[in-house]
Length: 358
Length: 261
Image 1 (cartoon, rainbow over the protein chains, first blue to last red):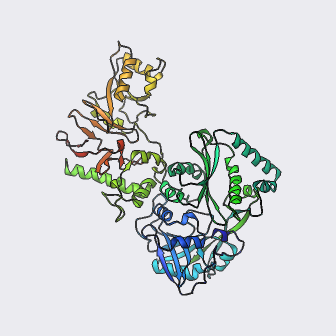
Image 2: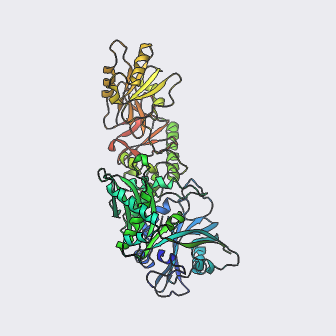
Image 3: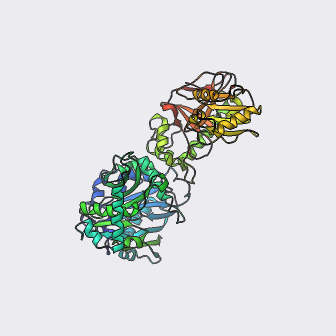
């Protein structure tokens, strides 16, 4: 899924599935109440869905959300051929309250997006056809929530946005995502050698400073042993800096992190004090066979034990991880586009489409 | 219970606190939605373990999630609730200076009666040389013939008394009681470093809950305390002292809720 989003054209599955029949069955699931479907792990692997799509994390995320969230699975005779995550936005939605403890309301709209991740689309179809959002997904959802009047789909590439062809629709470019291709590099030094001299020198210097700091150690790997409470507290420092949108996304809470961090495909770049074991900074990477996503970054403030410039070193560590595990590249996500360009990243245009449903 | 109307109002305040915490505070939302709770059950079929009460050390680890979505502090106030209990904690109605001698308390108590001032003294500072400003203030207040009330662990209060000049009258004292280490009377305050002051040992010898601000319920994990005020951090159904079993009933003398451990 993420791999597809980084291509300039349409979406392709990580592993090809048989072309689905046009007349299909479907399931509309609410992770708060519905148990994990038996096929879910296989579907996740087939569609290349990140760790934040594991059912336990979805359930935790859905409970701690402002709106009800639906997972819609479209089936053909050969198995699932599509999956869509959407928030049901309708009254009564309140900024400072979680969703009510019941399934979605009567009148509202569908906000199709990835759960807790602005760098990936919230849908996958085996044939990669974005128009299936209108032809297959919307009819399925309207059977479940008849009052759906609007469809907002985000993280659409150019071709997907064009494919959603309703007579009246609003298409707007949104913030692009940055993608760093790494498969052409043989080593971190090779990648560094391709960067601007000042950036290369700066990264080398930062890495040396970290190596010389006896109270700092970089550990990259599984997060299963980490303390979700400590991680949540650390991530909150960064989450509180970014209040530049009208409705601030909710941060990742401890219960959600408990379910997410125990997944084998969540990798952390941890900056740890080797003496006390305290976490000073962290980058969370949602692993993927080809395109891992940099999900979150945060560091302690300097007066609480943080260190300068760790944010820049995180990119070196991400490239090191991608090269060591043979990825095509790393999805660096939104924001800081100019800075990410200095690391060799390219940008992929993103669109949002708002379509009325009649 | 001690008085049906008073009990119903007390219980209603607790139910409002639970409902609000479930709707707005991440810690309780996640805990009660994913694991469940009882009395009341919020998600049909999910009753959890221990009735949904959380041990204090788990709440402490997850303090970051105890602020409601609208925002608020995640720093607990160990001096919370002191002012409201002082009237029952001593025979004297007011004191010029209220000193909390406790290493867990970093900020002075607020909401004291008019004419009273609050301050905090770290136990280590109580034994330091006489240049400690709080110690000087205590001595000056006593020299002026005004009353000083010292609150804290009994051993800390003893230490403070030993540091004061022998010619001065000793300060009044109210010792802390921990739920897992109850002390004798005639006075005392039930204190927890996370939730603050929860109750008072009155002259009847029973531990009275601060019913205006605190609710207690019996759970399989022990007595669970709730701070009823809509403050942040929000503290609901917390098992203090590692979870101490006990009962809540009415005081035959004062007709208010008391706990028996």
